[in-house]
Amino acid sequence: MAPTVLHLRSETKPLEHRSALTPTTTAALIKAGYVVNVERSPERIFDDSEFEAIGATLVPEGSWEEVPKEHIIVGLKELEEKEFPLKHVHVQFAHCYKHQAGWENVLARFPRGGGTLLDLEFLVDERGRRVAAFGFHAGFAGAALALEVWAHQLTHPPSSPFPGVASYPNEDALITNVKKALATGTAAAGRSPRVIVIGALGRCGSGAVDALRKAGVPEENILKWDMAETAKGGPFKEITDSDIFVNCIYLASKIPNFVNLDSLQVPDRKLSVVCDVSADTTSPFTPVPIYTVATTFDKPTVPVEGLSSGPALSVISIDHLPSLLPREASEAFSHDLLPSLLTLNDWQNSPVWARAKKLFDEKVATLPASALEK
Image (cartoon, rainbow, N blue to C red; front, side):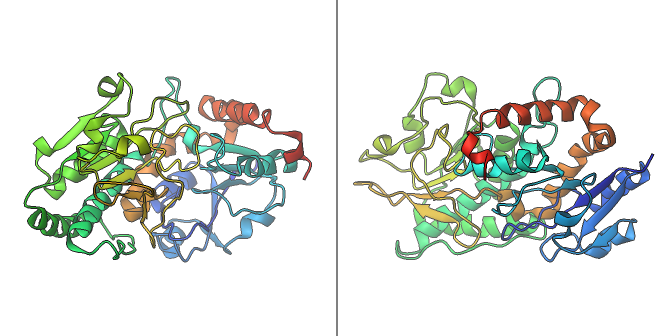
């Protein structure tokens, strides 16, 4: 029987430096009998030579479109928005299962071409827990950026937007930068910021709390909320009483909003920074419906419009925050994903991939006929 071929595509999302496969996990797959073809990439945090050195075959960037149907395409973020049907099995984050803007067009490409989406966001074990996620590093990076934005607000005029950011080589470099910013902001404010993290017990929230601690925010200034604290239903005044709100909650159904435009219209509001790590900007389930624009590394914040009192309020809603620490985030994610990757040679009979395929079929069944006729 011919070996299973995995094709690691180059990411096309701007400033996306992470990778679903690393040289370490690629070596493990090759040792297990897989053939791994790796597209050359100008953006990936790992050099092409690192993959070549462990036995992967380097292929041209973007060549996945033309490879045999039997090859499994492995990626990270969503594909470019194009119209041609998809014939392969794709392993990636597609961001189309929660009725995000344009979800029908994204999803319909798979059944139109006879392809299959195995969405990494919904790859779960028998208990329903995700087998691999970037949550920890998303929360870590989001909280770190939120501290920098808070300090920037205190040391620059409102007309000066927070500047663009770039990936860091490692966590130490990021924390060194954040500590400097926090010291400047604390001196300007005469106090440390008060930060509320909702979802503090999960992967994402744990990362946010870890970043706040490592940056030097006093423990008593970190409000760690989870399901027990939010059970009564929002909006919550504790959010507007804080300087920074980090939302680490992932939702697949609607709950009362944590904050909304009405709850922000209070004269004693201190809140000036929101980091919505989930970044479900267009999702109807968002508990933070105070903005409509996804932000980017080159423009990290968007202002909340229509506020009649209190300080200016900036929102961070970058949907690939872990790219701020791409090497460490990729290594951790790919390590957790590896046991599942090792079953891709018989993915239809692997429980974890079979669950992903079942969900794909269910979502495809909800597509309007017009999306399938293009």
